[in-house]
Image (tube, rainbow, N blue to C red; front, side, top):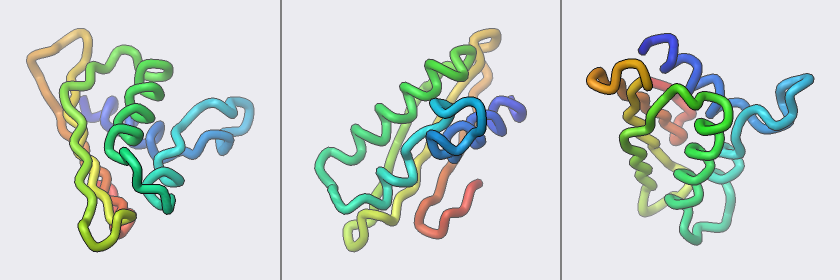
Length: 105
């Protein structure tokens, strides 16, 4: 689970086009979170995560994705992701991405 957690962080925090030789690897999460368009942002963040995970980490089951934005500043976001591995769905792990200070926990 710890290695899967590390793989998820790597995937979600890599911008598409950033990985040499694999331009589709990664997500557009950073640009989504810091965009000026706030319409349906939570759903778009979840969709971005699910699409990347299903393509690059299909052995990981997403249990829940929760995105919280500050009312004052929509670019202050915390994304909580709960997941399991296909081989052991009874053990859950949590990953928190804090975009307010760009801290990863």
